[in-house]
Length: 220
Ligand code: DX5
Ligand code: ZN
View 1 (spheres, helix red, strand yellow):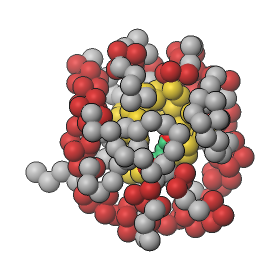
View 2 (cartoon, rainbow, N blue to C red):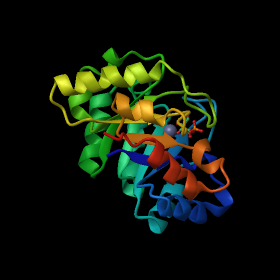
View 3 (cartoon, rainbow, N blue to C red):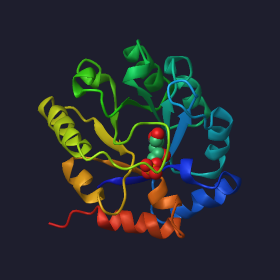
View 4 (cartoon, rainbow, N blue to C red):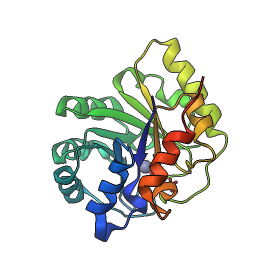
């Protein structure tokens, strides 16, 4: 069973608690929080105080996607602030094993995020130390971009790599997911589907989560 992770990047920040309750009511189980520093990506978003506040208003799994340089300096602080999952970019961290271990020992699931142009080979050594891999299906930095179609094949290859090694690693896919492409991404092996504009860009976020859950279900 796959999970929908609404990205609050496309939500109305002045009404964040309401926006979160709406997606939870629609059946979302993971809340995706995009942390951007203006260095690793050309955009600045939110940080630790917002995560602390979110923790007080939701029981959903809080998933912090760190699009920041030197993520090892901050990853553990995000766990302490209330994150249940924290992902760091392989392109941003020279000490990935250390960072992933620090996330796990602080009590959260550790993830490796991978940009569209980064080959899966970059994950090879670190894979056993991660609980999940986040495949970026757009270039990180902004919501509302078009899904890069070759990501489907990348997810399929990652799934094969994980299965061949007998690992329990989950696959999260982030960027441009909507009701038209969710099924092929789930069929390729994705477990967690992030969606921002396909949920918060619509009149009913709860209804959009329900629709994504329905459209992504593989009927056998
Ligand atoms: C992009 C972010 C995504 C983004 C997804 O850098 O990592 O999580 O919010 O938004 P959509 O679903 O609109 O592509
Ligand atoms: Zn993200």
